[in-house]
Amino acid sequence: MKDLLKELTLARGVPGYEEEVRRIMDREIKKNGARVVVDGTGSIFGEREGSSPSPRILLAGHLDEVGFMVTEIDKSGMLYFTPLGGWWSQVLLSQRVTVLTEKKAFTGVIGSKPPHLLTTEERNKVYPMREMYIDVGAKDEDQVKKWGIRVGDPVIPICPFEILPDHDTILAKALDNRLGCYLALEVLRRLKEEDHPNTVIAGATVQEEVGLRGAATAPHVVEPDVAFALDVGIAQDGPGAKRNKPHLGGGPLITFLDATMIPNTGLRNLVLETAEEFQIPFQVDTMMGGGTDAGRFHLFDKGVPSLVVGTAARYIHSHISMISKKDVELTVKLLVEVIKKLDRPTTQSFTRFTENA
Image 1 (cartoon, helix red, strand yellow):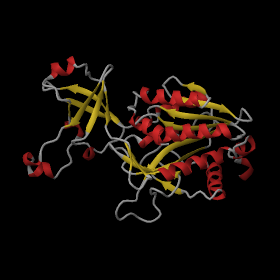
Image 2: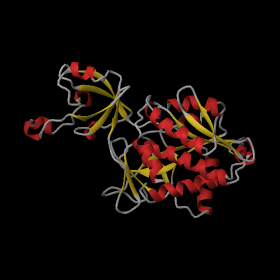
Image 3: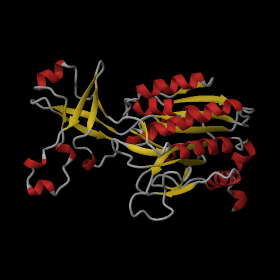
Image 4: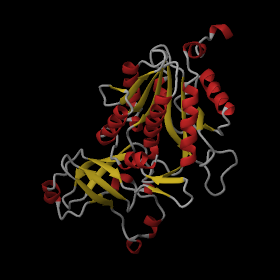
């Protein structure tokens, strides 16, 4: 887990600029002996047929992480930017970033005033993102352009990968959603040694953070009968946290409700029953402040039974986040056992609504 997840999180891939991550996925899919499938937007999957060509089970993380794009180069050499994905401006000041050009990467810092220069009014307000800039150490606009930095270049947060002293907590950037990429690859790898009565298509979409865009195109290529969005949920285990809220170490996180989807209850119940059968602890998430690729998957064609499965994560949509290694391992185990049950009669039962009318 450590080496692959580290490589995935350190890769630089904001929405629309996911190539570094896609290359890793391509390599690992081929290493696992699966057939590579791509769509026209850059989403990538590995297809493995089990004992039957159908049903087709989609497991999808997303390649992109939240980041920025250069929108203006000031005469002073400072770079103004716009967010790619959802950010809270208060987490940005003085953070290090990478400005990625076609030929070279430049380290910069999001500029901030020292406290000595702040007025009382400035101290008591949130600094707006539109006024922030990135300092790459250039003397002026001409030097920035000589270095090859242009409007439109992607900007990526910087954070190292580290396993903390409890030997369980993983700290890194882009766990939203390189975790989903890792889960898809690891489940695909383990299914080499398992019988499964279906065909699995495991990989990741593009541009989830800016409107679930790859999730709108990918189903036309992979044609799923069942879909799992593999993503992180928000850990709510800080000081003063309420009981029974998602937390690190509590097992896989299964989403019962978000702003884009109410899951298919038949599929949801099968996952819960499987977790109980194999004594896998799990957590339930309900959140109306966001959504995942499943919000698009379940609307494909005549409708695709879909569910969001992943782990809780702290501090997402910032430069840094945390997950539990134990949660990751249990999520892989749960997904493998569920997939082994998804034969054609089972998946067809998820949409037999007239029988229960």
